[in-house]
Length: 138
Image (cartoon, rainbow, N blue to C red; front, side, top):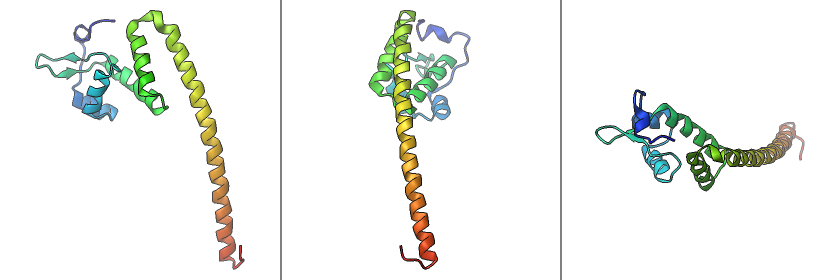
């Protein structure tokens, strides 16, 4: 891994406001992600303002996917630590992602069962309403 300040040379960068607008994360959340170790220390301009590069945006997009799929902040932090440790941790990172995917698939199956139960109940109530409108007492 390269130092955040040195990887900024000759790369278009974005301000924290621009990254906030692109990701939907508030500037406070972006600062928290950095403080919590979810993202590496972000480069700085000569005025000491945060300066995000394309790699930062790609990593943030991945973190948002992990969060959207229900990964805990603690697990995201662990994954980020492994990522920072370099290639020797690829196997462990792959295991974490596979386990998270299995967990996500289990949740999706559960949500599908719940959705089916809701559909059945909706159909039941629609039938009751239809009977009411036809003058049939349920």
